[in-house]
Length: 241
Image (cartoon, rainbow, N blue to C red; front, top):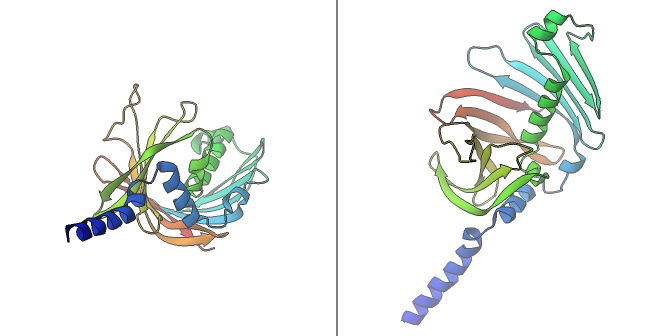
């Protein structure tokens, strides 16, 4: 009888082993297969309509066009009576305020209108809405170990990411559903001069609901909080038009 129970334990241990021993790269592959099953991200050409909701401020409505094959990025953002537009087409940059490229120096300073900001928006939106596929980018360090961690009462498979010095010093943790491999949370932390994580820095982002854009499952709601005290910062809502 003891051999029978030993056999049962061995069989079930064998079934659990693959999930427990997933490497970071194996987990990333599974997550990408969930979010982008047809591998459409590298040729993505589509529009995103995003409402940014922040406490005690009017909402900001943004229309974003990303065409990766043509290296094209466009964002139009409206808040109250102010509309800003940034266009990046390879190395060419265009900035508009309320539909005009003729912008006074005062307005340029007031609204921080420049091509550096255009590139910041491009990097921000292509990174966040290209996750987890963007974790395959050059310079990204996918840590080997996968941790099982409980966050907000649910257990996740957690992938740790850092970056080469030329890209950034933050450390990111991505939380995936242990059954579907859907990305549901991520958070980032600052590091000190020695590269050690500073636990009371950075933010965590809760992802809820899904919109499918060009065959890619993207989070509909992206709610931001400080790591240090859970203070709510705002939510990006991805609309279907």
